[in-house]
Length: 157
Image 1 (cartoon, helix red, strand yellow):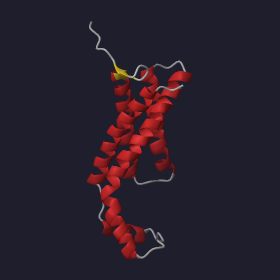
Image 2 (cartoon, rainbow, N blue to C red; image 1 turned 120 degrees about the vertical axis):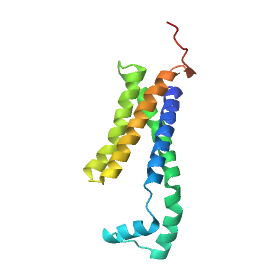
Image 3 (tube, helix red, strand yellow; image 1 turned 45 degrees about the vertical axis):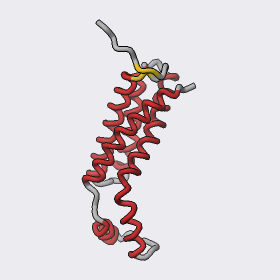
Image 4 (spheres, rainbow, N blue to C red; image 1 turned 180 degrees about the vertical axis):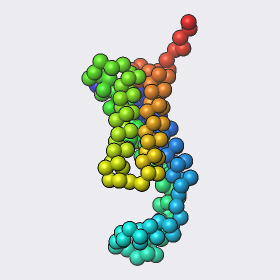
């Protein structure tokens, strides 16, 4: 059975990568006019009036970074549990299973964008988010032992 320490470490890493994703989102956030113009260029049919779409985008665009943080927190915890599963079913250590789980998250974020030919900015953003998650999960696994749910004692050499 998976210990809760793996989920905790995954949530910590997800929170870190979510904040980085939010920074990227807010740094490149388009205006409502730009989004609607892009929808017209791509001939995306919207079954609502443009006024209603405008009001919706005015609310959703400013909170999109917060949504990214919450999404990565949840996904991070799930991939942290996956790290625990990998640890329990293989001969990998805690840190190696965290690295494997982070690589799987990176693939989960990036491969759909590559398959559906997303724009380069989105692919780079997901790569950065995945790398931050992987590094954070490995560091959290080193710092807080997921098996005992305690901070690891510093080694005196």
